[in-house]
Amino acid sequence: MKRIYKDILESRCNQERLLAVLIDPDKMRLRDVEPFIKKVNSSRITHIFVGGSTVVEHATDRLVKAIKEYTILPVILFPGDVTQITPRADAMLFLSLISGRNPEYLIGKHVNAMTQLRKTDLDIISTGYILIESGKETAVEKVTGTKPLSRANVQYIVDTAKAAELLGMKLIYLEGGSGARVPISEEIVSKVKNELNIPIIVGGGIKNMEHLDNAYKWGADIVVVGTAFEEDDSFFDTLKRAEEYKS
Ligand code: 1GP
Image 1 (spheres, rainbow, N blue to C red):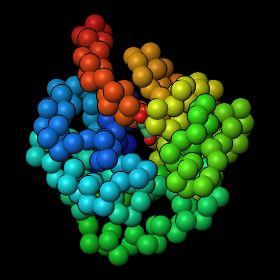
Image 2: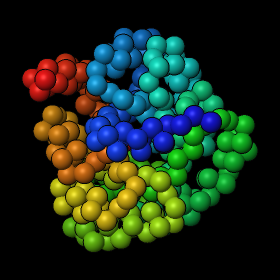
Image 3: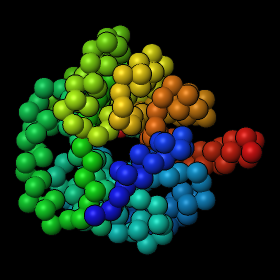
């Protein structure tokens, strides 16, 4: 069994800022993997998340195989569906959509995944996935038939996250949705951080250095960026320049 979660906990103790790039198998062409991953390797990115809300069967397996040829960074599945499980990855976020009340996404799909998961050596990380409204309808809402939590109801978001921690979940993912107009707010991230002992992932709508720095400052242990890299890979250079400026 790989020790991806233990490494996340260790990094957190050392106050390291973990950064994950999210790659959607439906959007990344196999011939683009090599140049893209080479840029990832020379950046400060620490983890590669792979997943999407709607993915063609076997696309995840093919993509993870290709990614693994070019990097030693941990590859973590962020699956929208059972068909996105592949033993080639290192770990999997075992997501429970705790902002919604669709039993399929709370426990149903997890049960269906067991036959496949038993055959893998993935580090399976139980994750409370909280979708928070961010100004536009997200793919997660459409696929799961659930509504996000209101940004205004911060206490309810905190209570949801805390309940997940007490249920034994190991990570909380505060999700604004891919391409969110605005990232998760300071009040939400900092209040969830204050109450929780488990690491927090923040993603959705992180498009520039200010968004990224703020997410860490407010309490994110891992920040996930997808669209900014997908739409404009000069974001890699922006990251690099910001690092050089700091050092
Ligand atoms: C989506 O949180 C991730 O699930 C990343 O969002 O694509 O907006 O960076 P972006």
